[in-house]
Length: 134
Image (cartoon, rainbow, N blue to C red; front, side, top):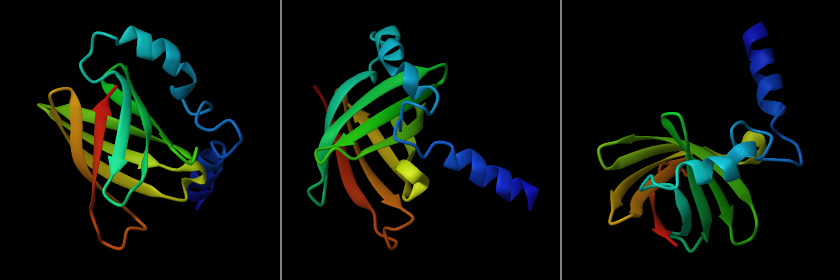
């Protein structure tokens, strides 16, 4: 029971007005984005999901992990972290307050990312989502 309470307290500490910058390492994303400028995946993207959601995304790297800061066109922000294997990037993402958690699987082709995502609230459905390098 103590672990559950501690986990809830830990997760709730990220639910503040400063999301996602209070979630490490998103507070340092400007510097980390500059540090990985030579990495093929790092940079600014435009994204489109199959059901009409659009927005921008920033991918930066910290140590071995890629971090993604998504900003929907309606200004909702969410974050993800991913692991690259060959030319596939597997990402887990969360919305503020952890009211949505999901996973995305991208294939990297010609500097763009083409993939599918699903979430806990997606009722067993997978949707396409593509990120196009700006």
